[in-house]
Image 1 (cartoon, rainbow, N blue to C red):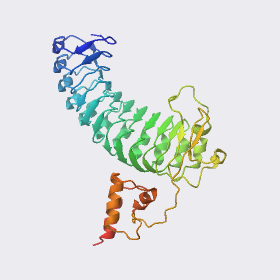
Image 2: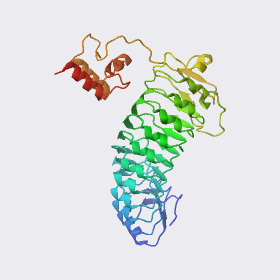
Image 3: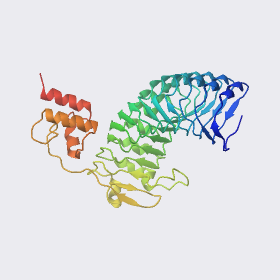
Image 4: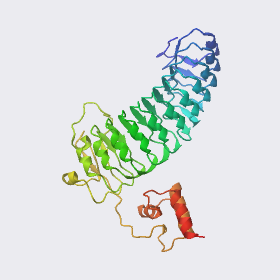
Length: 380
């Protein structure tokens, strides 16, 4: 049954469960409301269920796991809520799974790792929480993985490196922390890697240079401290976003990349105004040799418009003692309290205070600094 792109209203009737010989249920782009009836689980001959771009509400019924012949399941752009049912793992013939632009919550079920034939998985723009399940590393046929614009936490699992057929990986706009795993360098077919707007820290792994097919790399709005020289090996890169991190140096060989001196592609992410950003870091000295003529490296630059906007850098002198976050000349319990509040972002703080919190001098500010400070204040 194909009734897409009409003006159908009302609810999907429960009687639809009687149409057991249907191979297709395509009701996309209508004005349907109400919940997905559990009787849909009776339609075990279905190959495709497309209910996207309606106004459906409620939870995804667990009975959907009965549809083991499905190769395509599109429920995106509705108002669906609740958790993704664990029974989704039964749909081992799925190639496409699009749940984006809903209000789904809870954790991504580990059973999603059973969908070994999946090629396109889009769960973005929901309210999903918890970590990225390590079982997702089983999905070695994936070419597109979009998990952005959720509330995912924890580390990027190293198992992500198993997804060697990925072309696009978007994990941005979550609450992911820790370092970018070395294993991400296995994804040599990647053309787009989006990690911006998280809480990633530490150094970008040198192995990033293996991703020679990248055309866009989004690392902005994290707590990253170093970009390796191997960035210069990304010869196809046209978009690089580094702003709002804790970078102190940009390697010289960035000058060889297309982002600064390359030709503008005819069609490539045309919705971006700028193709390079580095503002609001700590880049004060040791600028790349090519940037003198560009009047410094603290800018957002576009070869699309030829426009340069100079952004501020955090270059104020900080002469305090590490751990003395309150800058009162003593490291004590009050500094611990301030440090915890800075990590939790429950108070406003200066760049100097953030610098003084890095007690173990690893380039990031986290609970490990608090532990070191506690050991220092209370050594016995």
